[in-house]
Image 1 (cartoon, helix red, strand yellow):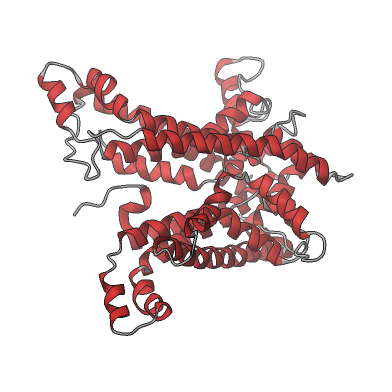
Image 2 (cartoon, rainbow, N blue to C red):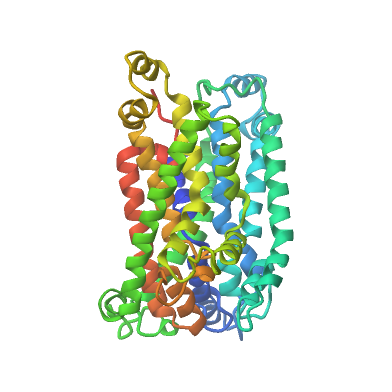
Length: 471
C-alpha cells in the first residue's frame, strides 16, 4: 500500500491531539445550525436543515473514537510486525488471495493484540472527560466523568464525588487486568521475537482503495478538524467562516501579547510540564534500576506502584489529590506543586515503562566491570548506566512532557486562578462560547506539541511513530 509512513505519522498525530480540541473543531463543522458542513449541505441540496448534530451522545462517541483508535493501531501494528510471512506466503501458494489470507491466517494470529488494543481504547474512552464536557454538558447529557465534574461545582460535594468515582476505578482496573491476562496468554510460537522477514502483500488494483480507507480516520480526526481550528482562529466571527473581510490575526495577538492571563497560562503549561517530566523521568529511572537490578527486597512491588497510575483515570486521580492535599498536614492545593505532582504521577508509567525496557536491553558486563574495579553502586549508576540510557531518558522526558502540556482532566479539578494552565483557559473559553480565541490557543498548544514531536523524530527517527528500526 502506498503511503505507509504517512499513515503512521498521521495516526501518531491523532494520538497526540487532545480529543477536546477535536470536539471543538467538530462543533464548527457539525453544530446543528451553524456548522459549516451543515450549512454547505443546506446550500447544495436546498434542505431546510443540516443532517449533522454534534451535540449528541452519538456525536461524542464518534469524536472519542477518532482519538482513541491510535491505541488499537499501536497494539495491532506492533503484533503484525512480529508475524513472519512464511504462513501467509504458503497460503498464497495454495491459491488463497490476499483477502482470504488476511482473514484466515493473519488476523487469528494477532487476535490477542486486537482484543488488547480494543480494551485499551475502551479504557481511554470510558475515562474521557474533555469531549463529553465540550459536547454533552451543553446538551444537558451526562456521563460519569462529567457528573464527577458537576459534583465539584457550587455547592461542592467532594465526598459524594469520591464515592461516585469508585465504580469507574473498579471498571478500569478490571479491564486493565483482563487486558494483561490476554496479552500473557495470547502468545503463539509462530509469532517470534525477531519478527521474521516481512514481505508486503501485493494489493494490485486494490492498493488505492485500501489507502483511501486508511486515510479516512486521519481525515476526520486531523485534516478537517485542524482546518476548522485554523480557520476559526483567523476569523473575527467563526459563524461567518473564512471569507474575505472576516480574516484576522487578532486572536493570536490576544493570546501571545494582549491577554496577561493567556500568556501566564502558556508559561505555566510549559514550566509545569517540564517540571513534571523531569520528576517523572528521574523517579522512573531510579525505580526501574532498583527493580531490574533487584536492589531492594520486594523491588517488584516498586514497579507495580510505578505503573499503578496507568489504570487510574485522570479525573479520579485528581479527586484523590484534592482529597489528600487540600487540607493539612500537607497542603498543596493552590500552589504550582499540586499540578506538577499530579502530572508527574499521572504520566509516571510512561517514563517507567520506557526506562524498564531500556535497562532490560543493557548488558550487565560494563556495570560488573566497574564494580570489579572498585566503583560503588551509586558511582556506577551515575558514570556508566546513565550515559548509556541518555537517549532513552530524553525520549521518556518528551513522552511525559507532551501529554502534561495538554492535560485537562486533572488540571480542571486542581487549578486555581493563580495556577491556571492553557487547558484551563481553553475550557473556560469553551464554557463562555468564545471559540475564536480558544482556537488560537489550541493552535499554539499544538504547535508546541508538534514542534517537540519533530525534535523527537529528529533524535529517534521512525521509532517515534512505532516503526521497526532496521538493522
